[in-house]
Length: 88
Length: 213
Image 1 (cartoon, rainbow over the protein chains, first blue to last red):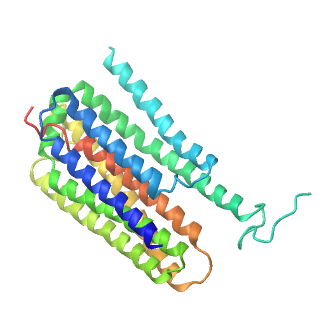
Image 2: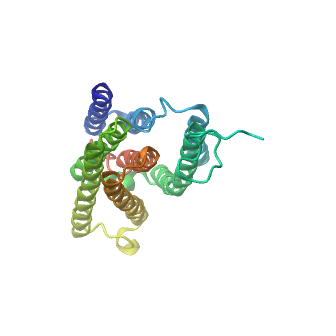
Image 3: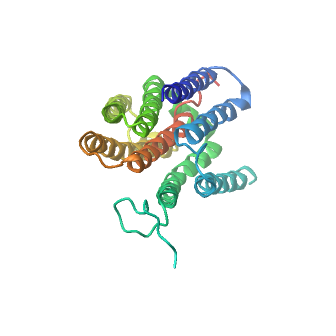
């Protein structure tokens, strides 16, 4: 049990580190990369929550498929929207 | 005829072949629900994305006037809540019910703290003139302001439901002896998902235009 709790605490520490990183990066002039860096870090944080806290790491195939299909359909919606507006 | 094992159902109708099948059905059902929640929020995210492409200067201008440090503190609070609810799942699996209930209560209180800070933030926003629906005064910035209130308001409603759910579950865990692993796991999935929504709202709303460009 202790090992499992330490493991969850480690994931929590990584999430806080990513929060500090994304907030700090917003103050740097990265040109066109500020947005991608911020959303890349958000995706990394969400992945940690998905994989470890929501226990997809130990879930079986069907549950993983249901969870990943949420991301897939969101990606379709947002990519199609962006592709439309960026190419007008 | 399919033979039904002794551990099937666990207190409900025996439509499941065994406990593992029931656990899988619980989780897939919850994930499907979370999929509909994602679709609910996706409209707002899509609108914010299109706004950002169409009006980048206005989006940055409103964003830099929002309360970044309150939002950053609130992000840390939600991440802490995700840790405590994940810890609750681990503790219950090992039969430590009192500590499980305590972790759930702490998570609920962190949710209350988030909502209090969010309310304080709204007061500061309104004082600063960031008021929803003032299209005449703000021009094309009004849409971003409206989307900010719609997205954070909808998120706050979800968080309120999460707080009530976890607090109620804490009482049930502390009082009853029956197995509640599935209940805690499902409530945890909801809480984590509301956290993930915020993880994406944070850069979408608050992190633009902070570097002076």
